[in-house]
Image (cartoon, rainbow, N blue to C red; front, side, top):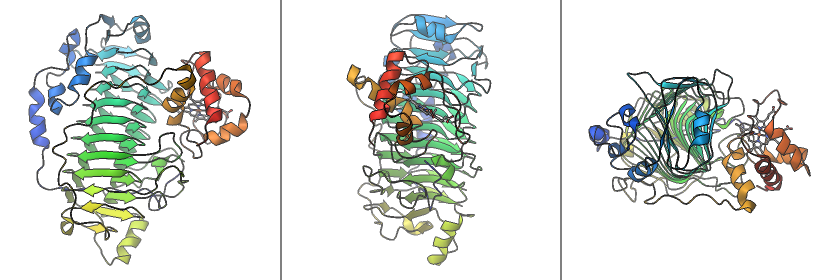
Length: 509
Ligand code: HEC
């Protein structure tokens, strides 16, 4: 989608908090036992505290499932990780020894753990050499990816394509192009203890997913730090998010197959100094997020922002906006464009809004304040509230309530599922749809520009010619000067390519 000039565009978030700050308490359990390390030799490579206990057993079931019995396949430098994946059966663990690997690993089976072995500080490195598109793509369920250093890819470090019950933890991701960790169309997943930097769009991008827990990550020097988009039931907690253009974003992108974002808890994060120059690709949604934005809520509902430290974000601490105030967002008749029931509970705000964009400045002038905002809301939306608001600099929240239905989310430990989510439909009739939603919709929205051209335009070009699409995606050639190249989908077999092509031509919204 194209530029959102925020405020005219996307805007912001909020938070602040003051008391009841719980990060220290949660971190103190880092030295707990090792539920997650499992029964494989990788235990030696797994930091002793990096286990399910660290998040208060959040994700324990996922971790236990992912480290179930199976054989261990070792990968040494000079061989291909993909060969090990090809040999592996459900339940197996692939261990990658320190060394450098330059390949794209595609995991299309279930219950595989891909775990790096870190020896005396030396990591296994997946190096895209600035040429390869993706480091790891998975479409299987029950996939666990851990202990990998991933550098210099052009597209994604780790992308999930409709895989459920995933665990992505303790990876170190530097300069991998558009997205760092990107589960798309996944249900029930844990993303924790990763360090990411230098990502051109969102470092951690949860897209069209449900029941996701994003915790204890460090995310910096990227355009967007953590993004929860067209997703539901997500907790983003205990992360360190700094020096991005925008820190934590939750919104609805119009024109995607899944139309809503709601039930998102953003708590106990450090959201500090997100003033990086916005180096997002021209035309991408995040390129419209003003540098200096701590949190941005756009059109998402039932978002709770609690116990964060939000400081030194030069534009605003939190921006809450509807779609209409986001420039260049074409509304989607099936998405509610307004952010409803946003709760800003206690947060610790300081020194935000000291150099706001002109649109925020204009609001300040209109409300006769010289204080840049901790929280600013623009556009429509109902049922929102903010606690302690007299203590903070706010703009545009006159209609918000001073009291919230709930003063804390402390009673909610996790929104992960108790039991593994069932796999997505594998009915032949649904294959094209799952592939389209799980892969293509990461870059193609129906009527808006994302990374690739809108599906509507492709439909006009390829009317009646699904086979043409199927062939193009196996070996895409560069066509447009103002778009990046499209990555090959050659890992899909001809039947899958045809199914997704047929579906792409039939999509109506
Ligand atoms: C990582 C982003 C990305 C993903 C994922 C992606 N595309 Fe694309 N796609 C692009 C970009 C960028 C272009 C424009 C390339 C150009 O013009 O050089 C494009 C162009 C196309 C075109 C137009 C070709 C033409 O002749 O102009 C088709 C068809 C297409 N994609 C189909 C698909 C299908 C089907 C999928 C899913 C299997 C898919 N794409 C997944 C980014 C992506």
